[in-house]
Every structure is written in C-alpha cells, then in structure tokens.
Image (cartoon, rainbow, N blue to C red):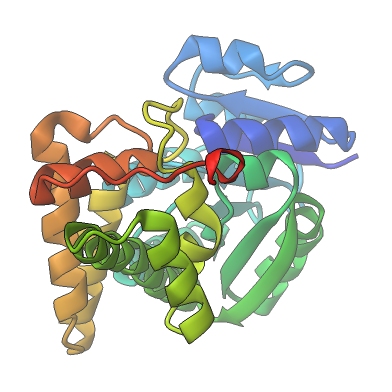
Length: 301
C-alpha cells in the first residue's frame, strides 16, 4: 500500500482521490475548500500542501495535482518540494503550458525530486468511471513510478516523451474538441436559418462524412440547459488562450485557436463563464439569434 497525495479536489481530482482510496492506497488530500477535503472518505485530511508533502515517506510516493492554471501549479510545486522527501514524484494532471512544466521539472530536479505531467481527457464522468486518457511527459524512471497508478485510473496512457510533450498533445486535442463543437453550432445554425431542422442537418452531416465528436455524441443533449458544472466555459476559455500561447511559442499559426478563443471569451463576457461546457449552445444561440433545439426521436412523426 503506497502513499499517494492529491492536491486539488475538483471534479477530476476529487474523483481520482476516491478511486485511489478504493484501491487501498494510503491517500492524503488537500484543497482550499475544506468541504471538498471532507468529502473524500477514507483519506487523511491535509490542511496545506505541506501536509500532503510531509505525509510522503519514500521515494516511491506520488502526489497528484489537479489545478486551474499554470501559475497555481508552479506555486504548489514550490511549496510541495520544500517538504517532500528526496526522490518523491509530483504528477500534474492540469492543463497548462509546456514551458511552464519544463521549468517546474528543472526546479524539482534541482531539489532532488521528480516531475511528471499527465494531462487528461474524459472529464468528471471519465474520472469517476476510470475512463480517462492520460498524455504523459517525463523521464522514464519517474513515469515508471506513476504508470501503475495512471493505468488504474484510466483506460489509456501514452508516454509521449519528455516533459512538455504531454501538455502539447493535450492542448492540440483540446483545439480539435473546442473548434469542432463551435463549427458544428455554426453549421447547424446555417441549416436552421434555411428551414432545415437540427436533426435532419445532423444526420446528413453524419452520413456525408464531415462529422465530429460533438455531432456524433453531443447533439442529442442540446435541449438540456443549466446542467451541474463539470467543465466550465471559463476553464475552456483559459485552455483556448493557452493553445494560442503555445502556437506563438512554437511559431505555428493557429487562426482556428484564435477564433475559438474569441467565441469562448464572448461566452464568459456574456455571463456564462461558470456554466458547464454543455451550455456552449447558449452562446451559439445568442450570437445567431437562432434557437437550436432538437426534436426527441419519440416525438417525431
């Protein structure tokens, strides 16, 4: 039974912590929200990052972080390193920037610690049901320490290379996910304006080829608004901003990322920032003035 820490107990971190407890690990957790800490039954409750770090007692112990932005990850990494035993591994699950994670890896190597990035896809449902996909960057020995845990928490793990590779792939993946959904809303809006209903337009696109994950799996849920927030539009806008920053740093033009950021930033400015990603349809409707609803199949003639 190894020691595992989890810092950041939101929709992803909280679910991961509960699964680690269920697997029999000795888990210590911390979050700025005491209610989240108390909600992870069976885990030791830390009152600070230092508490989690000092509860590690061997170089095989791992601490996961699931945090909102690069600055927070860097701050927590510094605090953790000041108390964690030499050789312990910090594994960040957040969506950040390659250069930020590379700086953390260098800093932790200097203090005798190891760093792995493992950003993920699958969301809250994937975290609860162990269906996450991890995109990993890090040195082989550190990744080998973390890999059994990741394999138990998800359905696929890809070690893509050194620190930075995993985060790059996560941002590339997010670009496709975000822009695909936005393009789907624009395409369907054009069809509806011409008098074609949403379901017919969707079925034609699916059959003719240029479909995407949203049209394949998400379109049936567009009538449901105001769902509990699992992935907020504010976080999506933050990720879109990071995609643009990555493109600039790499010298790769990202005009689609720019359009995506504009769409998501407008949603936040409209007051939708704390809404779940599924409420992106509200931004699409506000922009076009077109109602985008789908007739349930059991109500069709």
